[in-house]
Image (cartoon, rainbow, N blue to C red):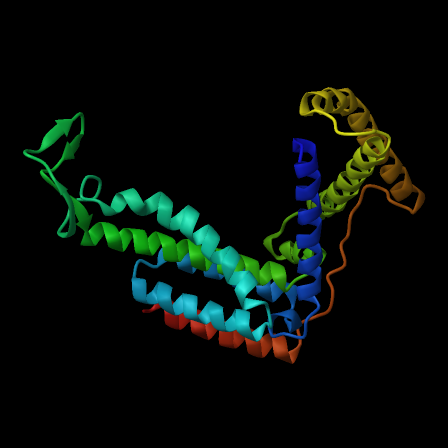
Length: 282
């Protein structure tokens, strides 16, 4: 596959992921039934609590609690935790792994890796004679990994159980201007429209070619179409704005707040708040 074929495949995968998100948000699960504003507040408090706690027991309890919420929300556990563990491994464990050695984090060596004749000093760093993993370093790595896993878990839980536009509207509780939220929603929708337009242009061009074509020639063709894509993007923007004006848009944006809180939202809010309070005192 040429690089542009791979790019088109990636775009298709992004569109498919977006479709799956809309599909999971329609399921009859626990979080799907809750008000988006409640889920947004829960997301904010969870992220703050995950970052503030400094004990492994609290982070482990939070991981178990989020696992139960994912399960009761009827999400695909394998698919969900494949993404969660991926981000946790690469952005938590691997990044923090060097801190587990006594070269970076001094402390009690619990597993010896290597031994040299004598310590070496380099600038502000000291390489001890005995190099190994320390208890303090391993604790720090475990804490960072759990924080990343828990943060990704709560974010994916809220996003997979909430329609994107409902989630954006729920940000009004943070006093974000409606005009800014409207720009986010239009940008989100326009990104997929433009991606589909680029894909159609490339497939139309490829259907007129006979045989294979080298990557260098593909790059020349693409470079010649960049200005056209920019021009087409500008034209679509102008057409969208004129269509909004034709439907009465005057520059003032007022987003619909949606339904009010129900008894289920109130009960779920009390239970979620109670669990977070318990975790905070661990």
